[in-house]
Image 1 (tube, rainbow, N blue to C red):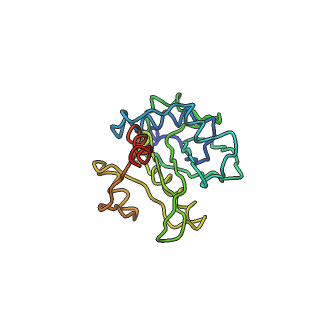
Image 2: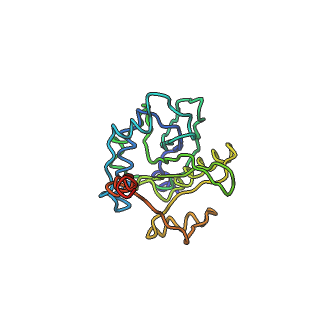
Image 3: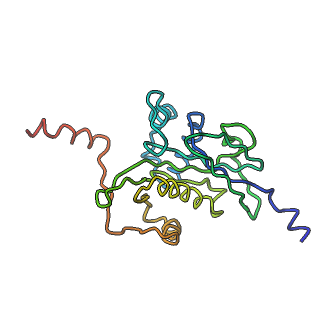
Length: 220
């Protein structure tokens, strides 16, 4: 018993807070790590400046969850999250069960100072269901860094988005999952999500988008 207590990690709190422009370097690193995990680095072209301009525009910013919204997940032994009138930070005590080795802890030190470490994020924005005649929230990205996985933190991020959707009387929350990510699929099914096998994503991007945008002019 004495040995197990000696090696037990210190008490930690998980904090989910609204991101701001100070978090852009962390958001950029997290998205790149996610691209590596998903084997999609060939599609990754975001820069810190492009993220800052699109996620945190300086002119006419929209309220959270009415446009692109990022929630940051941090761990801290002594949380003191900044109070934001637009989103009350969620603070939960977590039992990490075993010590964590995080070689990138310094690089992911909280932008707000203190002893917090950024461990994940979720990016969402509103969509609309014509069948329900209600808006919803679409999760573009949800990601927890590798040393912190399988500790319930991804569930916390999803729960935060679901709580916000319910609070705003939205009809649903949707997201995509790669077909080879069987662990994620199992996790989503266990939490009650429907994995819609009959749907496929259709996407126009890059040169194909530009070509189709001028289709009428060339075929009119």
